[in-house]
Image (cartoon, rainbow, N blue to C red; front, side, top):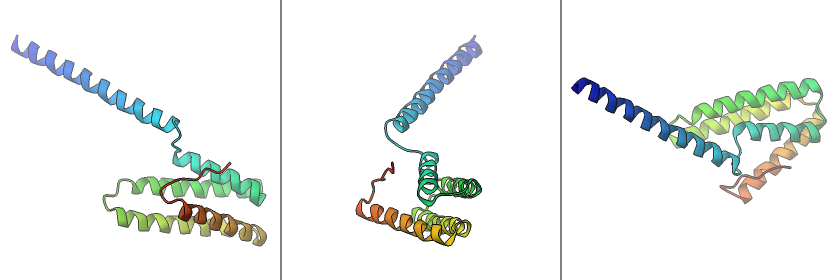
Length: 136
């Protein structure tokens, strides 16, 4: 009888904990829907901006999409890092490599325009620290 009671309590505890985890996941998902953008959203926005403003060919678009996806995966892996300063240094290196890889795909004229877009983004970030700008 004691085993049955213990088993029943463990089962109830497990069900209770699973409801709590489900509620937390739901709350996180709602937070993202309420104006927070994901890394995939930002990558898609950047690709759209590059396609429109740099007049990318289909081949260039495909290659840049792969570069941005790879950079996103690397940056998401850094979120597990306990050392914030080290993660920031690595994040900057990923960003620089991403920009270098993108430039290598572009024509000379596109590369010049790309550098202008990068400079504008950096300026917005400096003018609004801690706030993300949304490009339309």
